[in-house]
Length: 240
Image 1 (tube, rainbow, N blue to C red):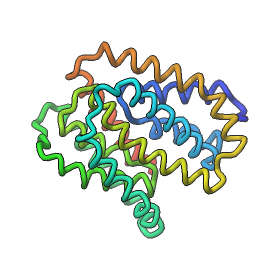
Image 2 (cartoon, rainbow, N blue to C red):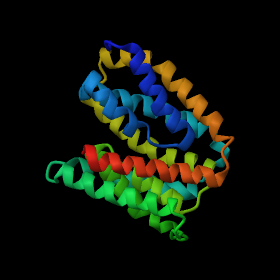
Image 3 (cartoon, rainbow, N blue to C red):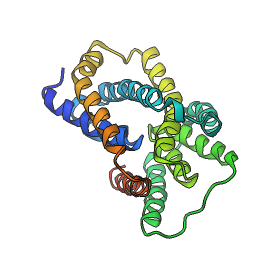
Image 4 (cartoon, rainbow, N blue to C red):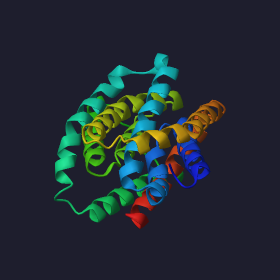
């Protein structure tokens, strides 16, 4: 059990409020805050466990809007790339990879916020390279969200499509990661205890994020996503 259960609840609330509103970002918010408090051996499987549950909730909540044709390529490419990412992590310089990713994500988000023209992806085959890169980063460094988010914004998905479609790919990634944690014996009594403690924060944050998202116009939602990409990109640049 963490020394500060309230801090655990508040961190998970903030992470999954963001997730409920935008459909991504929970791990990138929660991990830097939870690792110093719980240690990576507890924080990583805990965030994976919370993430799978939240992704299932979003998929069920927006099940009528899900577009299988838009996500199967992302999910397939991502799932195939995760083992490659796990292997590549042994040979790649993590700081260099995170800095390159941070530069790309920050530039993309800032470019969009400045209302400069962004390319629109008409051909759904672009999902394969974006999904593959996402899976590689998920397997190597648990940072697979940004490539999929960029693909979604360049495909001009509506807010609901954006949130729902991403979860199909994220669920594949998270399930593979969670299975790896389970087979490795990382889902311990401590992790399960912390999960029970964190659950009220996860559920309340997720519910409130989904409620607020309904009130956000599509254009404002897109700008929120772009701004969050800038924040994530800067975090990758300066904390990696």
